[in-house]
Image (cartoon, rainbow, N blue to C red; front, top):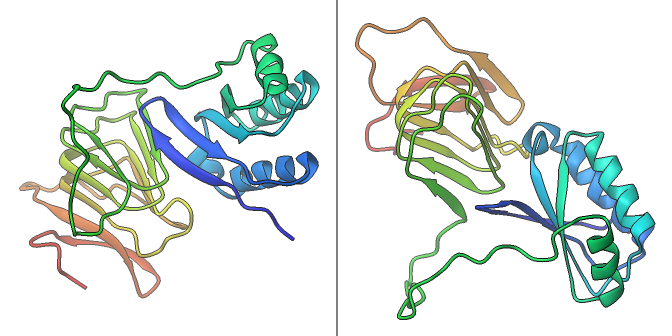
Length: 226
């Protein structure tokens, strides 16, 4: 039976959690998941959540090298096994994620409205910045030429979008890209790709989506166009 892995975005990179099973099958599932979403994972910083799996330096090092050949950097191994922790430490890998400081009186969000996972970035992305998330990505700022966004879901930019953007990176053709000024160097949704059109004299908010098998852009008003 085919094994599946789960992926979560954090401020420190991606966390990939592996299922129970034999390590050879797990390793195959990890590599397959990355190969299936090569654009999404390219240049990614990856932490591996293995829980109680007992892994040696040879097993972890072999996976690290295989990921490196795919331009994916394994930087941390998260485990409850002393054997795995020792092997990871010998390879120079981190054993835990850094925990951001939180106010002592911080309370969990209580809401009856269902939501979806998203990353919110409140700053301009400059050339060389790469932002990847398996959920949605929201940027309150500009995305300059040379910056890159890859999201498993939607991409919303409250500013000028000039860089490279890939929404629906896992194959979701219902994903959209929205921006107050939509002029990316390259625009992708799922498997559809387009280059930036000529600059408009009076740019305005637009939404890009796949319709009838074609990637199109149209005026973004209240977000309810279908």
